[in-house]
Image (cartoon, rainbow, N blue to C red; front, side, top):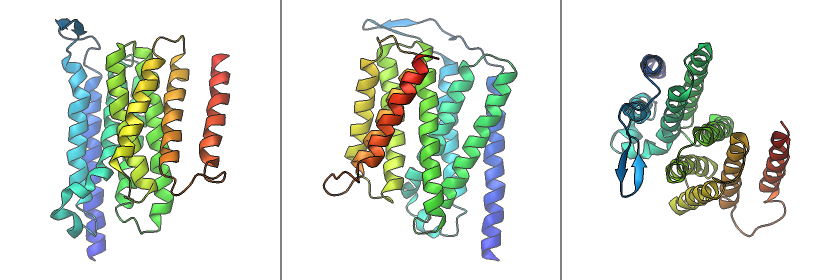
Amino acid sequence: MNDLTAENRYINRFSIILATLATFFAVLYLMPREPLTPGTNLFGFIINFSIVGLVPVVLMLLCAGGCFWLFLTHTDHEKFVETPWVLIPNVVLPSLATLIMSTLLTQLERNPIWWFALGLGLVIIGVILNAEYRVLSPGGEAYKIVAPLLISLAFSLFLAFTISLAASKLRLYIQAIFILITASFVAFRTIHLRTMGEGDFSKVLICGFLCAEIAGAMYYLFLKPVQYGLVVSGVLYILTALLVIEGPLTGRKIIEPLLMAGLLAIMFVAVSFA
């Protein structure tokens, strides 16, 4: 009976969170794409302040609060009530997905495709929320199935974000900061999932800074946005795969990074002829 009650509470809160996000996402359709205030010069840097640009951050914080509220319906919620910060790894990916999807929606043209992107974004966020709820118990059977799903969704979102970032033509330092933050989030969640919570925070920083440096180095190259996104996302995946290897490196342990590097090279060349 208690399990049934917990599941009902979960369904109710899950529906409320998605409905709230859907409402705020729909409002983005009515908001202008242009900055609301002109750029200002700060120590030689032109900063374009836009209230529209702050909306994705607000929605990310809203989703983060909703995640904590949702996860407290779990049957093992006694473990989280007094120490809610242990839920931070499970909150990272839904919040990041909300940030990326809302950023993409603010950049897209207002047409029927925009509404398709809205629906797809809500489906992705819903899948991630449900998956994060299912992996709250690392020892459960669902963990082995859901963890790879979460990792693949994280990198798919990161790829879409980097492609959109490259196409936006933002300044180098702004793109580097965005890449640093998002790559660190994805690396944090990926390493946490692959090590079942035993990841080291220093590894996350290594992934974030290296991806930001590589993205900065490619900024002035004549690359298509898709090529830019493939390289940055591929490098991040390879780094996370290498950093979770325990013990000495052997040929068997580096098969996954090598396969990803080969696949990345093939896709990079294929996109260049597209």
